[in-house]
Image 1 (cartoon, one colour):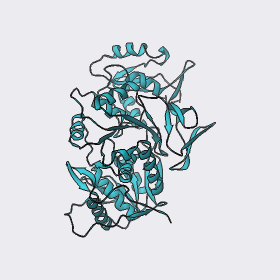
Image 2 (cartoon, helix red, strand yellow):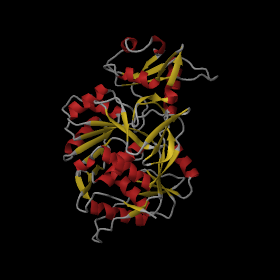
Image 3 (spheres, one colour):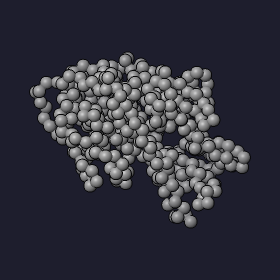
Image 4 (cartoon, one colour):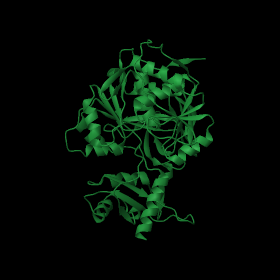
Length: 445
């Protein structure tokens, strides 16, 4: 049985993490993993809800040593946790917060003093071992479970490291605004660090000022892993932004203008990742240079009557992608939005992604989304838009939209709101949008 090391490109005295602005070296990390592994109960599935990214990684690796499968849900909603406790036998929870779940055994992340027992040897994990079950975000419906072997996770991280030439940034500190329980967060803020000799930032600051303060405190080279919604909030800050060495963004395509502004203000190249929970990272692009995406090494795309499928590389089972893709050669493609987002009004076609792009490009719009709700009888009603734009009126936004989109797609009505119900990765789950629509209709009906 082939095995793969827990970490690559790290020596024991190298910095593995920054916690409270203090370095934690690789040797201490390996000791923490071994200690926690000895405390884990004899179960099969671990629900890793640790919010501190260092605690999460220690828990993830301790579970690997015990051959426990990490369940990584898209949220910590009590109803979802209850569903998981019924669905998976031998489940327990690891947390560093105060929650206790009545339906499953809960282990609180322990505190311990440094020991002099010596640094353990680098663990070797079977490549075929199921390391995690990662769930889709629910943005297109109910969360769906996807098994990930240790080998596929390592190969995906290696592909990303090679594409971004991360060997040129040894020891780079990585701060992420996305949770490690999300596939993008797991790959880019955990696995690429473990396999690339990088150093993680243990926190996940929420407010833009806190993110910028923590970035400024990290040593160079340093990187920000983020999403379009978080990036837009950071760029809204008027103060000078801390210079970075690398920017990584995913979960929704960026406009070239936003990417160019981010590169100019952070003084670093920005790359985007296209992927999904089912496949992981699929392709990347330097947004200011090209609208085309380029697949990662050994990943191939082909199309049939159902859509575009990805296979090869770290993708263990062929995956049908949920997006409208235009192939532009062997490895390149253009992205035209999600398959489920295509709409037809009065014989005219577009996508919700395209409409959202135009809405969010209006100066003064902080956030916005188009919604096509369905009536009880299944008939499609007219488009609605929810907009966060504190300095604008609805009439101003509508006038700007008239200059950008066909009149058939103008929202009727357009609702001004204080915020959109985005989750930790900046996505809008379908259930949350449906609830927002229902609540606003009741208020105005």
